[in-house]
Length: 494
Image (spheres, rainbow, N blue to C red):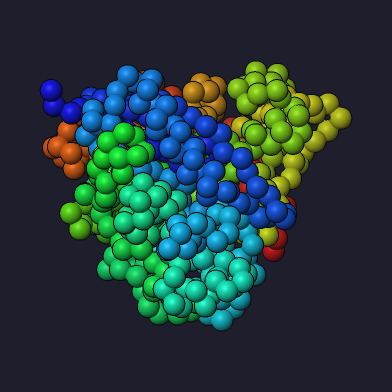
């Protein structure tokens, strides 16, 4: 019998999942484990890398068991991950020397501000497509070297390895044999020249990150390593890797220039495929690598929203406004029409197109008759407004956007998806398989395994579940959006 299944590891910000997909791209079985968040100081966010590793092994074994499959039934493993979250570990022991610093963490804001003041941002943007912001992994690596005793000396001797989560998992899965990062994750480091696809020595020197720390940069689909027998019961080839947003782009079959996908999880990330052209944005979007296959890079413009689903979690855990996240839809439905309440979820600053790490969250427009319904509705609306910010920026850079393909945990909420279409004035398309991040990792692995002959063949597996078309008149949506822009101005740090 031919081997027709792929195991996708989806290591996210709030949970670790494994999903078994069959050769038609359908999920067969899955397992998931929540990932505790560590908040050492205001604006700091960490994860325990050992917890990530143990959860990864547990969910992989769990998903296989639920699928009633064994390791020998797998054609390969695909890995996708929360991007920018950074780990530094000892090459001899494989042990991390510090907790992982999460992408949301803002501790290097002062360092980024100093680099900007020194006039370095244009160089970084020209080479990496990124802005100098604590979001990215380069300054996180430097922070660990500067704040863990003996770390910089050990790094200079070549005793340490650094990488993002996919890199750390690949190292562990292969028993420490492979230290590699795929091009999409590497492109989020402030250290990669995205046009050459190689680490940039000048940028490494400015940030203080020695070359000996960094992984080899590899394709998103290829023979990346082999998971050792002790993990799943037999060796399994690792054939695909991509950062979560780029994996979702592949999973949504956004393989032609002009196609847009938006993923709604902890944050929201919209990617516009720009093909072989690494476009420079005039509206503070990021230029990034969408995927790299056979050494050829496809690029994207990306808008990054730091807080989307995490705002609903705050309603649940911070305000205790709802008991479980899925309750938010019912509470929001009780909001009065035209309530005028705006929630700007700048808990860890504002991402694109503002890039203001010092902005902080606020709820504005409250009156005596405002209540839980209005606050819940404003929280969901903030996701829609932030998405419009990104689409407006993309259109300002010359993109013609006919529709947006959406995925992630929040898109099961039909009223929210209709509100998104109304707020952006753009049709919103939800696929049958909404686990597109894991699906993209499976696709990339399956390409190398021969389950699918090409990216074009993958696009034929994409099936529409429902399309949401704008029903609100443009004057109403623009009036609401003007209120949002005013609310954002009020929370900006400058």
